[in-house]
Image (cartoon, rainbow, N blue to C red; front, top):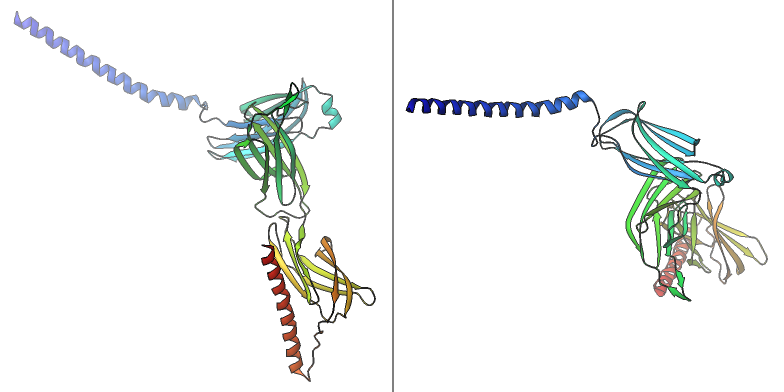
Length: 395
């Protein structure tokens, strides 16, 4: 009886071993087969497909950001604006090859005529990301000519120039039963872009900005601009509650700009001290011209070269009168660029009691030349001394 039981036990053990071996083999086969089947399939998984990070459009422009999670060779972005079944405009940006993780932002201005836009009740903007002729991803956005507005916030002003862009946002107040109800604070995100044509050359983002009463923000351009070139500043304001995004643009032509500091101009019987400050990211290169006009007699003109200035930089120029007769003068101070354009001006009056001697070179009397130069130096030192004392008093 013992032999059959032992034989059955051996058969059970052998069956168990074979079953475990089969399970291990099937598990190994499935692990190996899954990657192979994915590679043969050739489809792009969701993680590898291009992701449209942001897409905005109104009847004036469209703004989109796309991030690529795999390298591609023949990429293009297609923007289309339609009303009903009518295609109003379509534009394609050919990007060529893109790298893994690369993020690209493009802006298009629809350029529709104002009267034409009012004839349409609704629009549909579409962005398509293509690799060759294959569409990898697309997104649509519908809107009307009457843009959504920020119900709790008001964009009082958005403007840009050669120095900076600035925005002023306030809360909208509401009346309730004869008394003013305090508006609730708002939270916004600000997305600023500076464009040259449709190329984005600068961007700045501010998130979770609280607006409790009035919010003002100036954002200076951190690089030089090209003179006489046209730029467009684009600001998107995203309100958290309600969830609404609106866009504002400001166009400008980059120009030199410099200002005279009225509180830092000194004119007396010895000369003039003039301070100017740059107000543009287009470098200023020019001169300071001072014109003395007497009641009778000849007009006296003095000029001095100023430093090259950009936004926020200052330069103080000193000028000493030489050979100016005693008398009363009308004084006009001009800041001119190299083309002779007047950037700024200032006017005052002056009475000279003792004229400063004019420097005349003399070969026979070198001692006189040294004395005259010393006198001019002392006059200039006195002038700057008065200027410094004046600044200390102001402080």
